[in-house]
Image 1 (cartoon, chains in turn blue, green):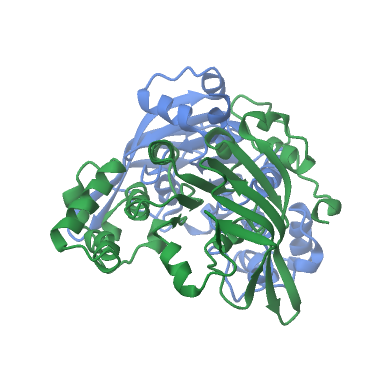
Image 2: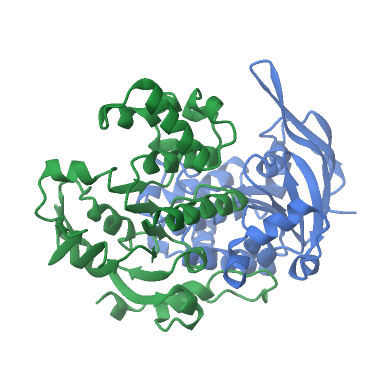
Length: 252
Length: 276
């Protein structure tokens, strides 16, 4: 049994009476401790899948199961302890008027977890942020530092699953490398399962064991990492994406 | 003769905490070719591009030993002379069409505004030229796009509209500041090939500003690598893989690659000496 099971998921938004099918009939499953990538262009529905898992997008058909259990509405505290999300834009995802300390201790307070002081310090250490950042505000931090805070916050409740929505696309190349290294280290240390969204095929390839290429809300093709490296894709769209990725551009 | 000559360009911002130098002594010359300027946030690449058009607002100050465009001294040109250059001879494409197009004006009106006011063309002639420009950037249904508002266009379409707008006056130099960063990879490839064809067909000079070293390596003829307001390395794009400066090498190596080893990515150890 897989840790994340998504079957025939559809997400439909109602835009002024017109139905917008953001995700259409997508299925995927991710076993524990595996990392799975979703790749596609803007509007392909990849982020919407993550949002649907968290209850941030309406599920119009299909099912989402975490460790065999169907998710409930609202998701509830047990879900939050199991699944956490890191968003794309570290400038928008941290409360601008909360100190880092408050941001990190809030999940502990909600869940009634003690020793907040020690846990916050430990969390900063875990993401290699200096303890002096603890009482600063987000605007005093760089983009990469903020993304570390967002990762630290997601890990406060010691979840098994991290949903990563373009976690490095707002960062400079060298900061992206540091952040990806941090995520890979935390994954190894804690046995995390990642479901990661990116438009950058090279990032997905670096982080994930398998990936699903999406277009217009539909699944196009599922590939293993070896398939990708050997360019064994079946569909034209997956190949177009592969050919256009910046990594290929240098060799072509 | 080169189109643009820049010698020892400096951009300084006077702040309460003292002067901050965003660009510190950048020199380059540009012919009718594609020059890439690469660097990370805060390296001064955008400020270098804007300086050429003297688009730095106070408290920013521009100083240079020499900055000439087609024989004309950009440092001594009057504001009136600069206006005559901007758009007409030197055009600039910005990063995000969402923020660079007027959201409450139809695309057609934005495209024809310059033709009507600057070139004093009639409505029909301006319209005809705008449609030709949209066709040049491979917009399939220019009539529809002329009547659309920017929010009704996708990012790729919006960026093509921006490029079309900049190309209408037939500039000699195009400064493109991260023109494809907000676009999807497949759309990015299309926009680049449009730019490439325009540079070749019209014999324009192009300054292509980007954070993406590999993209610039593929697309440009020559590359300037900037770090902390300085050019740390200048090289032919074809020799990118033989780059010598540790910063350039670091930027190349820290990117993940398809089919690469999945070990930790090499981090970029910034050396304080590079900034000196």
